[in-house]
Amino acid sequence: MLAPVRSGLLGGTFDPPHIAHLLAGEGAYRQLALDRVIFMPAGLPWQKADRVVSSAQHRWTMTKLATDQIDYFVADDREVHRDGWTYTIDTLATFDLADEIVLILGADAARGLPSWERSTDVLARVDLAVVPRPGVAVDEVEQAVGKARWLDVPALPISGTMIRQRTAVGLGARFMVSEDVYAYIEEQSLYRNDDGRRKTKDGSRKL
Ligand code: ATP
Ligand code: MG
Image (cartoon, rainbow, N blue to C red; front, top):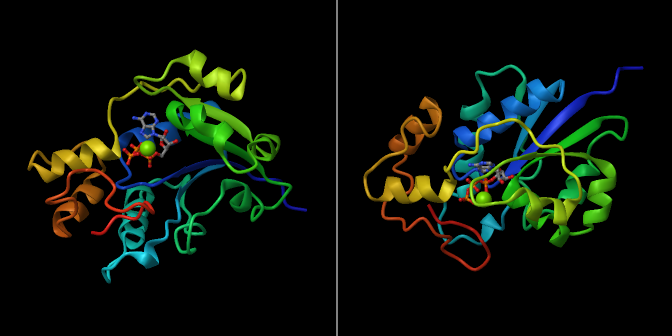
């Protein structure tokens, strides 16, 4: 029998994937003795977007670009190509039960975990690792998920929202994202004329 794989799972909108995501993945890989870190862009009801090019496609391409050079980072498309909202608990069910999964969450995401679909089942299936994020206190997270395993990663005041807003006003995202992702954002003119906020109620972004 094959030895069980110990994977970190880092999910997100990844709009775009940025250096705080990469640092979280790196911290988890080194500090938790993982075999690999899976970067999984979330599925959104992108089919409802009224343009041909889907945001899901861009987010997937950027996630590939951000992780391609690192052999222990893997981009996984099992959520992004699914229609509609996807629940973490359903995604977890697609992994082999023998595989260990460490769910890597930024502090804001960890704080919100109790509102997730079947959150107790999620917590029963995975180990949790939390990455500090500016503006979110340790207490708030631990009230939500109990005593947490905190990764030693610098808390960076960087977000997808900030990058979209800065790009929209011409400040650019260079060095906040990998060079390949930066080149892709420029080449595709992503986030131009964008106020950085979600455009539609269902959470999809029209690019
Ligand atoms: P947005 O502003 O669009 O929400 P984001 O920067 O929060 O973008 P997401 O794709 O929403 O990025 O987040 C994916 C995961 O990465 C979440 O668990 C989130 O908490 C974590 N994360 C994102 N940015 C940071 C950061 N600067 N520090 C710590 N964790 C982060
Ligand atoms: Mg976010």
